[in-house]
Length: 73
Image (tube, rainbow, N blue to C red; front, top):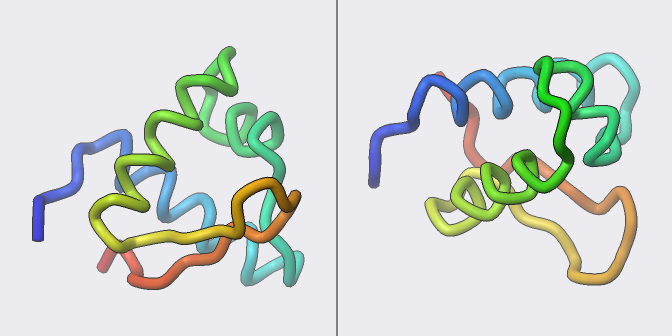
């Protein structure tokens, strides 16, 4: 298992908190805003790395199917 970067950990923890509060995942734009990034493509890259490392998953082509598999802690 690869160690998370600071930004990956921040995104994962923000995602965990959002889902716990709202019971559904944020959109890429919402997640970008929550972690202070202007680009949703940056979030996409971070989420792809998290997916490769087994922390998150989603159904391709389906909105709001992002789910946390492994927590940051």
